[in-house]
Image 1 (cartoon, helix red, strand yellow):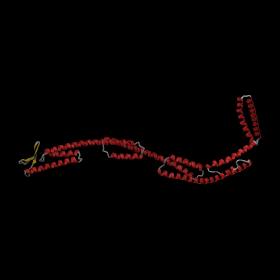
Image 2 (cartoon, one colour; image 1 turned 45 degrees about the vertical axis):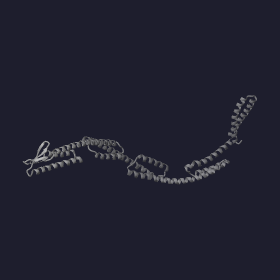
Image 3 (spheres, one colour; image 1 turned 180 degrees about the vertical axis):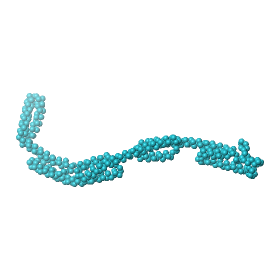
Image 4 (cartoon, one colour; image 1 turned 90 degrees about the horizontal axis):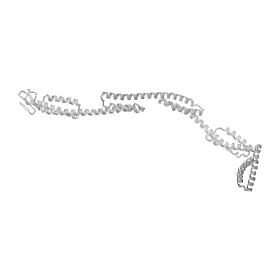
Length: 409
């Protein structure tokens, strides 16, 4: 019989292993010596030691799942429990028990971690859904559309929740995207319709602008072009390719008209500047007639100057008031001279003036006599009162005498 600390071989070739529960039969050995039998089953034990060590390392250093780790542990435990090895099987059981505890702890940690990741994923998806639903109401079509596409990529990178929760959140998320897409599509469809309407309106405006480009009715046509421009702005924008072409045609028609008008106005301005010089010369001649000494000659000379004036034509608008004012001043001076002459040669007016003067003179003389009498009588109050009245009558007399002088004495 042969033995070592952990096993023995009896005389029948049966191999035993010692455990805390007593000896367990390992197997029988008939092919060689008892020592060879023990060595063989000891090597099997060492093999279990190596496998357990490898499993411990995998559990400690890799992301081996708890399920796979438990399967490996159960496999090794079966081998230990079958007692087909000679060695400290109880120590192996202890190591496997510790390994089970480690796996259970790891499982719990991963469960907690997974729960945390799930909560974080749920919160993240809730936030994505809330943002998507807010963006669904936005009119910032480009930026909101780009952000929604970015949210989809973020969603794909998040862990899945339980099917019900994940499906509910995804339904809301997807519905928000669809609502935004529907609103954007409706907006651009409406915009396309508006741009088509704008194109039709602008086609008509261009047609009228082109028909007016050869007009020489400068004022009304320029005013109509301003109205057309206001209508153009009010029409809104057409499609880009149409807008640019229509604008070039519209602006080209305006340019043709206004270039022609500018050329004509330039010639007209030059002519009016020359007219101004001629009218200023006439005004110089007219002003030499003032003061009027010979009414008949002045009247004839002014009439001749005025006929030449009327034949000259327009002058620049800003210079017109000044040069016309000079001629009007001469004309008024001649009219005043004519009125003075009329008064001097009008017998009825002269007689009325002489009669008024005589009445006022008599009234002044009478007041002076009354003042002298009042002072002689010592009635100074009456004399002062009559003196104030005399001042008024004397002023009227002076004015009447001046008028009478205009009639020639």
